[in-house]
Length: 553
Image (cartoon, rainbow, N blue to C red; front, side, top):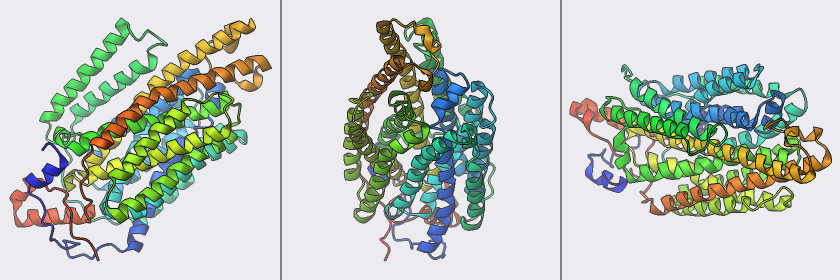
């Protein structure tokens, strides 16, 4: 099928005249939805908090552990990498086994690994613990979205978008604030323990409120070969973009070998996926126009979202000389923009049933926000920086979940898990590659600018420890000014480098073909599939399109 629209017309589909609850069960009331949603959102909150709580303290952590700019980047990249390679596996499992058990397992993995990270005595230990934490985060983020699709129909999802946006905004904004306070108080190690009570609460709430129908007993058949090849290929690709320009030139035999190896592994993964009985990422999904455009757009949004959140902390602390607490406070405009835009756009989508106009506005705002952030300097008035962050956050808020919504609205209900996880996979992959590339560029560019500035002062460049992140409080006044100017200009250049990706996202949204949002939840669609299979066993091989159902009264 060349597009989602043609898919719905050429594929046998569930009858649109089916009742709201095919199994005879009444549709979930608003109270039941909110109760179930509370546990899901708590899991999402823990996942986001575990990552965001250390963002404002990472410069201090890396300095205390005597790490370099490369170490800083890899602490973030390790989490993103593990999240990326594990997301398709979680998504595939979501289509095969009990989703409630899966999200609880992901929650335990995420929190226990965070506690281990708090005991790290060196950068290598910290990176390893954060990588394991990324595995749990991949499950929490993808499974949360899948479970929301189970209990809320696409047309009604907008009215609950405010809750989702609020949770992400509080966790993303409150995390750096809380992390800054803890870092300036008892110490940064306590940042890794703060999620434990929230995790326990999430486990209790999920157990008591999330009630899903039993899953038919079925032995999961995972594509282990495809998972191994995909993980190895993505890992090698990220290793290349991380160490290029620092350990070896971009154009060198090392680069050629790593790129060739990564492409070979990924090509092998494609071959294996095409033959696997249960592929992690079914290749036929790429014949769906909506899916392909959502993948491209989500990868572009990932660069903006992850890159901005990572390097804003460095800008606030190393270019503007703020404390971890203050740097967390100064990122509030971006999170406020994300929260408000996500909430309002969700209401608009729910009322009108149209998502493309909202996404077009979001894509333009993302482009304008990145361009504005690319014009800042170390001494730019904070009002301008705040306005640029708010515009960028608004654009991301209008795009991120609506790409997922568009895909879920067109997929076979039996592939919601793998389809949703695939979009999340490419978004995280885009973010991981973006952070790695931008981090490598920042390391080189900041070092060059600092060297030039110190040379003008007649100071030897070795005074800053050969690439380690500086502690501004220990630097003499003139040297500190050089460092702040250098990091301010270098980080601004990173935002300009991300502008082309925002253009790609805008083009993807323009090319997106809007499909009317249907009114049935994932549970209702799955129940109808089971009913059809009971009546006609051959229906098990029929693709069930997500077509619009009758409006509810």
